[in-house]
Length: 457
Image (tube, rainbow, N blue to C red; front, side, top):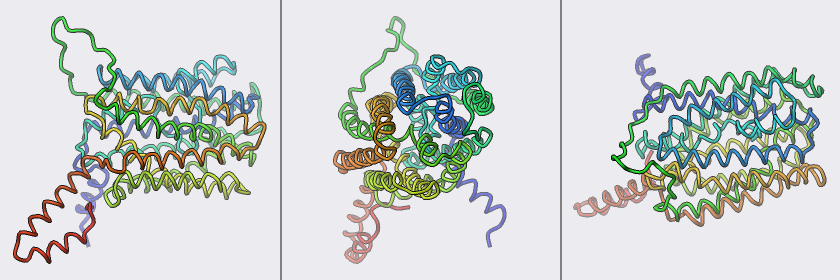
């Protein structure tokens, strides 16, 4: 039986592996905190706006405006963080979200809500996956990639996804403080105020935590040199064009159903923020293990194959979820879908940024998502029309087809382009096979090697 000290060391290695660093711990902690606020905003904001009298089309207009400005911010942050550093954006953007949440807590003016929601990339909703950190994610991804050796990159992104799930779990439970489904106008503003103030508080905390990040000094400009300027990522342009195709299809799909998940549960099954929040919290707890299993699965079958398989499964599951007869059945299918999504998401992010030129990583992270974000901004209008005029299930059925197209195009583009760590593992295995083949008993040993998996644990 292992000693207590050995058990503590094993737990420490699981939580903080050898490749971890102080910077990564700070980024992970900020991700957990910020994700709790984003998740809570994604739950209560759509329901709050519906109680303020917003139709599905009007909610879609709000989502479109927030998504458009978020796309602009994300692109600019990605481009400029390659030149100016990542840390300022990891501090500043959460503070903008805190300002937006504070305004939502004290005013019901539609123009003000639209303006502040757009400025803070606030509350457009993304279901149980609403634990994303917002438009500074390109800077965060580049910062983590630069701080982690290639062999630990998939693990690092898996842990960040785990942190999002952990934070979103807390955000879902916080929705219980605003479990109101039958108040309107000024009464709704008062009832939802504690939730919005909670979002503001955790967003401020996430921004302040990022102050502790230590970013390597960038080479000083030579005397007389021009100021840093935005550069097109020319070395990574082929990768960028392929990602544009796959991400556009995914953006159209996510834009049609993601912002409407909470609204759909509210309208279809007449459940308030509390029940939706508890469902999302349960989903995030159950799916935490899947985020940590992502790297292990990628080592077994390869990153590209894993992303393709899991994206296809989550696409297919949208249809039975949309047709489910009860909140419990729909929630159960959604749980399975999110467990699958949590495996593929960090692998896709890790793969895309690993394929980019090191000097262009944040730019690629930002620009590769720009068409997706624009599609996510435009498609909710169509989805809102379908919800109001056709059926609540129609956007989910169309999204299923689009997301399946995303999975197939990703496989078509990248199946022959494994990431660095998989190429290194394959080269090492080939060298081992060649060395064994030269030995007297090499044929037997070589046969044993060929029976092993192409990548190891």
